[in-house]
Length: 496
Ligand SMILES: Cc1ncc(COP(=O)(O)O)c(C=O)c1O
Image (tube, rainbow, N blue to C red; front, side, top):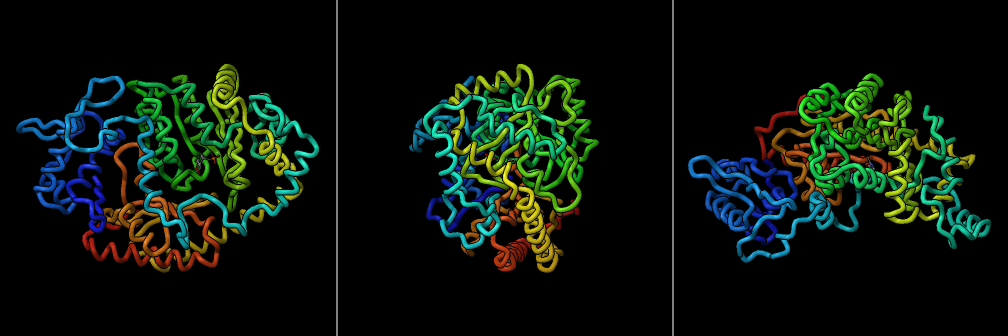
């Protein structure tokens, strides 16, 4: 268990340790009944005195979060209450902590955001394009023209399933990926994030099991957990999700939903092989579960094309396919396409109506105009070339500065790579130091539905301008060096 205490913060270490543990318990990271480390073990791990741990455990016990069993150890308390709240005894801490929420991971983002300096000079955290990479269109004129041609885009509700113009354009666009989807099979979403949420709201509830990759897109974990689902995970290797391990998990109770990012997986950048895609679909068919295939950036490939989406093989409607237009086009438009068939589609369309009565028409038309623009193909080719150059630069820099201490994936497309540091180095701690040097990245710990692995981080190379990559990576490598000096026995990671 990785514990991050900030010795400069002025908050007593007992309080910090208590908060770290309480957050893990309330977020479900530490499940009910899970054993907690012994006092000796935790004091060594967190580098604090025995007394600090004893007092933190006392507070957790007073708060009703843990129980101690004489002669056996300390455990996360079982609540037996359907809503997951625990009875609280007065401990003098903020009563609001006792209100359980249904978005447990949000706390990680809050903590990340709280620590973010508004003017981070070189950011490797966000998956967005630096200004020199975005599609060069006269956006203002384009929007003016759309409103002038059809004022109804502002003065009417559009169809709940989404604008017909956009769905037609998306059907043509997706054909180039080997996806033959009809506009009637699509629902326009306010970004893929809303698509994930809609699928969860429709099909995932308390007691259901959802399977994800480990690591995975962190903001999806919260959505499924928020529905009361048990989120289980399977590791990824160089061929993507370990479908063989997934099959073994099906023996007891099949999952309701499998969430996957098969192409340039977030956060590792790996691609699920065609063989595994077929196996995954076969599994879903055999146990009648759904696959949510999230595909935000398969057009950003650096060499040979990735295998066709799982959806392209789907004969019986097991796959719900999501294509976001945020990452390579216009995140501010908040437009994505969800594709499904049969009653799954109808139920999702009904859910969309309940959520927002349909997405804004103006932004849908903007995305449709981009997709049908004669510039689009050239733009995508330029984006591939530029992002590939940035990836190569980062790889060269890592090779030069860090090859003897860290490992990294070599993504064949997309926006980021995944870096593995020696086992005792925590990316969460590194991030605090990184921010002081005006850089940031995504710490890997937020990407695990179960106990997090702390020694990974995701470096996004699309956001920092090319000229700043050298400086950013060299600052990052210096920080890793310094951490390794402080942890001389850290074990070098194996090749992934
Ligand atoms: C894998 C994945 N899916 C979905 C999203 C959400 O994208 P959107 O902007 O379309 O909501 C993201 C954003 O980073 C993502 O990485």
